[in-house]
Image 1 (cartoon, rainbow over the protein chains, first blue to last red):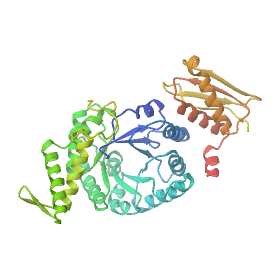
Image 2 (image 1 turned 120 degrees about the horizontal axis):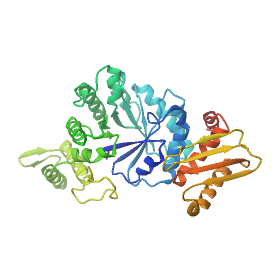
Image 3 (image 1 turned 90 degrees about the horizontal axis):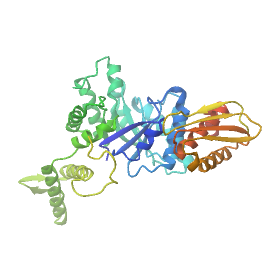
Image 4 (image 1 turned 180 degrees about the vertical axis):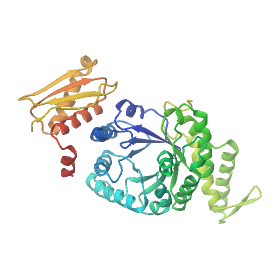
Length: 302
Length: 96
């Protein structure tokens, strides 16, 4: 589940501690943009120690490492793999070259840490024009890739256009990324909404992202967790239909049929897949009474 | 191994600890913390643990604590020592 993927600056202990109680699906500890050049070593060590000792519950733990073209990247990946990160976010991904470089370091890191091959996945942050154009190449370059994420701010800078709240300037990039990601069976995560004080704007932006096919959104402020979760919460009728689909397909399977009829329409495997996704979102939203993780501060907060 | 030069890591922000390490003929640990009475001994144990794991037996360590968790203290001390030993990244890279 990657509805809300919250960035936390890697060199601020108080913020890292907050990660234990914030109600996001994914925590992204940032060693890149949030950390000045002369503090890269300190942030790497702080994040690693935090991963080794603090309890972040069921949240997926991701570390955004430094650009693969810098000397920091290798040290980052090796250290955070050893410390127990679930995934590494690779910034400024441009095609297969970046992915293969990160995957190769991960091979080495997993071996040193005594982990089985493929334990740590890659989330590709795509934030340049060339990166967008090569999204499919990057997505299919390694079996480690589990998601694509859009970095809209850097992309707007690369495009030489103004970044606006309406985000029309990102339409092509968003659509292209969803297409590339889905073609490879990956999750696709939308760019963050950057006005921390505008929760309603964030909600609308997240609704739009969901309508395009994104699984979730990068988040830069805990204030945006509630609007993002609200945007990805299915409505009651969607959930009711999804449950009916699952039940109808279960019965169909028992009767040896691949496709069955429900409410006068034929349903088959793609409909079932979509229904399961809706049920997963409903569970995460607390609509089906399934406790996916311990309640945390920020649940239901504006 | 001994501390060869003065180095620092961390900050004086809430939840952090500013660690300063300096050359000294003996191993000295000084703790300044609003919670020293309750956690001073535990902080010293953690500091000694980090120093021992890094093979440091000579040096002066000063901890200006602002309510840091144990993992923060360990991380900051680790970084300060690496900085004091110079060429942190080169050292780590060489050992990998």
